[in-house]
Length: 393
Image (cartoon, rainbow, N blue to C red; front, side, top):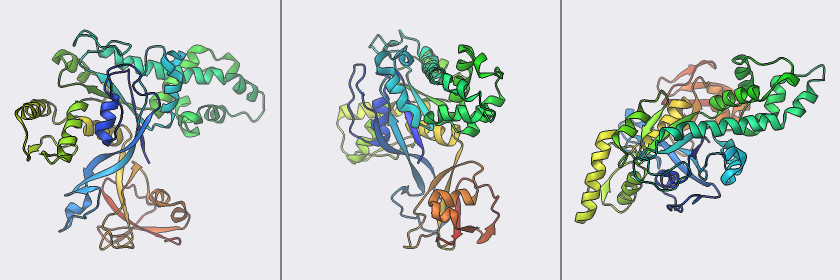
């Protein structure tokens, strides 16, 4: 299961984003550290379901008339303040919560309506660009601190004739999701002292930044786009990093209205239709939200999730089936499962994703669209429907 973490300063709208994306009941309030313990929930990324190629839609619970929602885990971490890596605002505890994340969504108050500490100020008086560097710098310092705290152990290991720096650093950083392969890639791109005893703080900082870039990619959710001054939004959207204009409050309102049968809306739609009885105040609110959605092609919440998974992580959605002709499992369910795999994954990788026993007993795979056996080295593509043949099937 892919894990996405929401990070940012207090009152940027993380908990609202989380509630909108998961429809979970969470506390949302206008004061710092509303969230202390992280909220965990399930959300989804949106893609086209292969059932669109069939005469009848699959009827899967995660499919809405050919729109497939693939589950991912969402983690809402408490607000971070400047100096978090030094423990300010329980910062170290909150940063530690990010270790399980495959990708981070940095929720920013694009309206500039809260200061660096998350305290309310007049709209437009705080520069949201400062929030972009703030989270990145806190993560980089935090990782550098972890490396520095453990460096004495690395130096001791370096006295051994079979010392391996990549393995030693992987041991130090495995807790933040860095593998030995990640460390090897990072070290190839860095200029660093050969002898561990010669490393200094600058080297730790450089390594921390490189590890963060590789293992904790970040997409910016420019939140409160509905009230943000245009110059703030334009400055954020002009950054050479992934940025999505969002209104988490708008998404939450739409999902609640859809649940109440007041509107017809599916997460990620660029518009909605009023289908129930609404009063004048509700209609005015919905009309205002529609204007924001027209400007930004939706509320941005689903777009942000998709950018995190399909963009930054470069995952593809693959559907394993037992019956290649009917696209069903052993119980006759059509396209029951969907897996988000790294681009470049092979049928054998899919087999292991389904179950370790299936992977261990892997024999070959069949492309369900063509009915033909495919190579073990075949790189799976978005929307592939694959039958795995295994001794454990």
